[in-house]
Image (cartoon, rainbow, N blue to C red; front, side):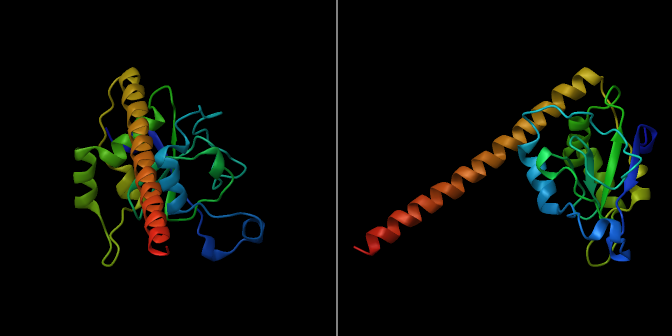
Length: 188
């Protein structure tokens, strides 16, 4: 089944065109924000109203929205920390009915599924920085298990991502500690 059969894709706003209403007060959602959201900021709490479309401000991130980066081909779920940021044309909001598709499972499928990775690799466009287009994203073929299985896989995926991020942070802190100790020993 094509992604567009169950998911609405809303492409971010072209910020280079300038709109005073947005420019002065809002911060753009970035790849760094996506990475932080994907690495577990979201896992401990439930979204208020996950992935519901916001007609008034369609380009603003809401807590629980699924966002997809066309440049990195990664999907994540907006955390409380990043709600209210505006998404640019390098991102899309993926609007789902969470009774049919678990948002965490959708992220898992887009980020890790071998079938999806193969489809994306074949479809990538661009000479310098290959990236997906909204049309290609909409036409990706996705298989959906039962909603219970989706929820189980999605939760496990985000737990894994959070554990990986914590392990990476632990290594960074351990390195800092050892370097500080070595620095102090060297100065004696």
